[in-house]
Image (tube, rainbow, N blue to C red; front, side, top):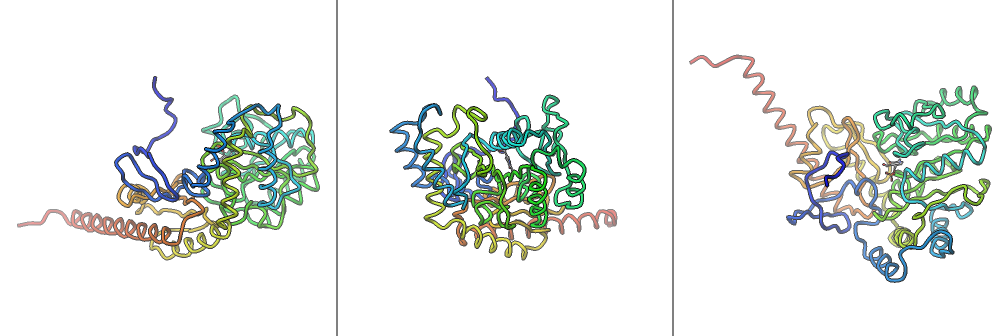
Amino acid sequence: MKLFNVYPITDINIIRAQDCYIWDENGVQYLDMYGGHAVITIGHTHEHWVRRIEEQLHQIAFYSNSIKIPIQQQLAEKLGEISGKSDYQLFLCNSGAEANENALKLASFHNGKKKVLAFSKAFHGRTSLAVASTDNPAIVAPVNETANVTFLPFNDEEALTRHFEQFGDEISSVIVEGIQGVGGINIAKDSFLKLIRELCNQNNAVFIADEVQCGYGRTGNFFSVDAAGISADIYSMAKGMGNGFPVGGILIAPHIKPKHFMLGTTFGGNHLACAAALAVLEIIEKENLLRKAKQNGEYLINKLKEVDGLKNIRGWGLMIGFDVPDELQDLRTVLLQKYKVFTGEAKPNIIRLLPPLTITIAQINEFLESIRLAVSELHSQQEVQGLMYENNKKGPVKV
Ligand code: PLP
């Protein structure tokens, strides 16, 4: 049987990983500035995480949500403590799309309304309403199309105000990423987030912060939107939550009340997933990873600004992006193939950096050295090509 071919694959077989490094089957070491797509929070195969999962595996891996699972309550308490949301309620699921799907559905159950407001360049996942709220028609199947979702330009406060003036009483929820990830590292303005908060309050709409990529400490704040001095009604989480173990969830404000069976899942919140998620939170706390993400991210951003040719360096904590001009279009490939560094991308010409939050200054310097060398090599190639072009224009040399 063949695999269903939906991914353009990089031809590298990673067989081992530790902290910020990964190794292929030939023993070649790579620096992971991509974190397996913002998933690796506490470093690959962290000892504590491995031990916690192993111990849990020997006890019980799974049983249905129809019984008491005390480790879910332990996770809720730790999450409340570290995120500063002890009064919120936790619903566990398995992925980012599922978290958003549940968030949008819960909002609609809560206020009985149907319309969702989303923004240009948003990415919220690939399930039905999550993908309908994603600004990429190429991944929305005809069956996912719905008139219930409206897109407005990201960070456009005037458009937002006008839309609420007209349709406020129909809007069930507003879903927004504090920093758009797939969209290319676009940061929501504080005033934009505050306005969403205000308009949701005035119109009985639910503010959903999609923190699947930008949350869980990546920016140095546990949830990125909180830095604007506001709280969302629902926070969706996934990627960084299990450090690679599939687990997702939503944090739900106390005024949104549960009813039996309004949400549900077979696998969500299983014993193993909770053990993995608890291990992550314990290490975030023990190793001060929020503070490190903020400080080391700032250092990396400032140093990147000194690299000749990179454009529009932006980000927050360890969620960083920059534009790659045409003359450096091979930069990502050169970084991977020659300098053995994994990075992320956002179409058409953006490099995204989403390393583990455990990354050290020494590892950041190692990356900076690689990118400086790669850029200068590409610039030299351009110069040589430019000279050859000029010489060709002059025509053949007469002897
Ligand atoms: N929301 C955001 C902001 C994301 O970046 C992603 C994935 O990239 C998702 C949702 C979907 O998460 P998953 O792939 O776990 O379904």
